[in-house]
Image 1: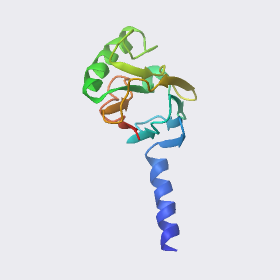
Image 2: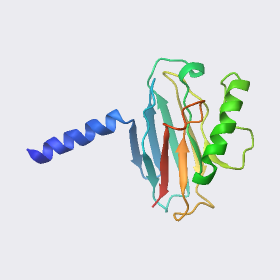
Image 3: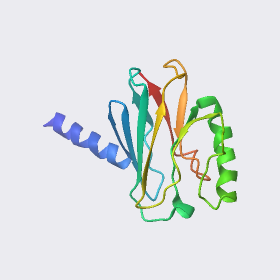
Length: 152
């Protein structure tokens, strides 16, 4: 009985914190009209490419509560997020990532409520010993919507 309660509690916590599912080299993240986000994602080092699926279960449009998924080295995260804020307002919230930014390893487009997107990217050149962070670069979101990306 105690084990079952802990299992149910664990599932409830996962659902409240943003849903993340990993199947080998595929990752799925669900978010909504708030700041739900997983605290970490991991993929096996045997993956040559990773597919990230992002879905927004909310109702708010992307110019109000848009979300994207951006991956960078942890050391670059704050600078990439700051540039993303400038780009978002200048682009009318069609994107929140600076064009051709070498610090960005991978990113999705901005999506609003009811939308989804995916991106497939290579792990070539990435190392299990390096620190990576994924985050939402919509203005003001990156301080809450961030997590550690691990290659295991």
